[in-house]
Length: 408
Ligand SMILES: Cc1ncc(COP(=O)(O)O)c(C=O)c1O
Ligand SMILES: N[C@@H](CCOP(=O)(O)O)C(=O)O
View 1 (cartoon, rainbow, N blue to C red):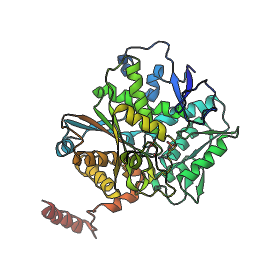
View 2: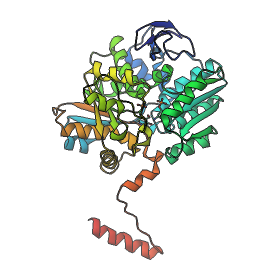
View 3: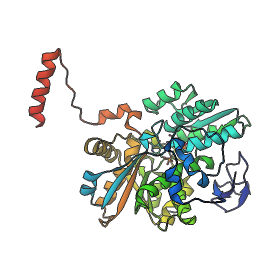
């Protein structure tokens, strides 16, 4: 591995140790510092087969693996939202649709890398706490790698599709009477044991996979003015910012985007504190939101995310559950993009920021739509449904003809 580890709190640097996840000096989280030997022109990455997934950016990744655990993750569509950009009032608005990943969320980028490391360090088993998407992704990638998978989920709070994925891939699922934050505590305990390799985002190797989203944005549209990301455990926004910083550091780009993190009102320990002018989050023991994926009260990566937003000159925004549901409907019914509620929180944030006069009208904005609508079929109940029943063929024809008169 061509890399070292650096503490984001005190700056201490360490040689790579496979299971070192926090700073021995101050307990801060670690980040991977990559030290590329030779870098190709960026066009070289573009020429490589998309079936390589995140691994087509090999020189910018800290792991050199002959046999990475991959399913062609990443390379997700960047969809222009032409109707919404007019209403919102920005020059161009794009959705980076992470729902198009192999298991339907952005987690696959990170899981490809972290499971590859787990395999290389010869872990006996992998473990993750999850609100659902990390679990689904960990279950799939670990199955592919032949690793035993243990998942700790908040009981009754995981969307149906995600639970089904985890079970389908054969993971052992522990439903915990407690929230995600409690589940993560259990994972931290298990990670101290030699048998278990953790796949949550306090593991900095996972975030190295997730930074590739920045590379793909740069490849398609250059550096956007603003990148908007839903925030839960706060790893993804940190990873994407790291990706943009590396593009600049290694001479590929000159600009950096503003990073905007969006949290749901009932689970907004970082965003509420930021907006109140504090300099640390207000952790909560009882997070609540319809966007179950980001129902997190004590985001482990808060310091990395805080730095991403402040260094980039961006901001955090808080949105209500009804704003999230409205954004889910706008994406689905105006633009054809199916997002789970948390995935639509980024658009909700943009709508809210526009109403507060944040944009000058000339920006190129990208919202990261983090998870597919199929993940959370129950969320359909929040939207008016056009559902009719028919007794036979004639009745079906008549119902459709009459319905056309109503909608026309
Ligand atoms: C669909 C979805 N969106 C957003 C997030 C937030 O990502 P992060 O935890 O990296 O902040 C998560 C997980 O937390 C998620 O599953
Ligand atoms: N939304 C996440 C929460 C866990 O975050 P992680 O980045 O630490 O894995 C999930 O899908 O479980």
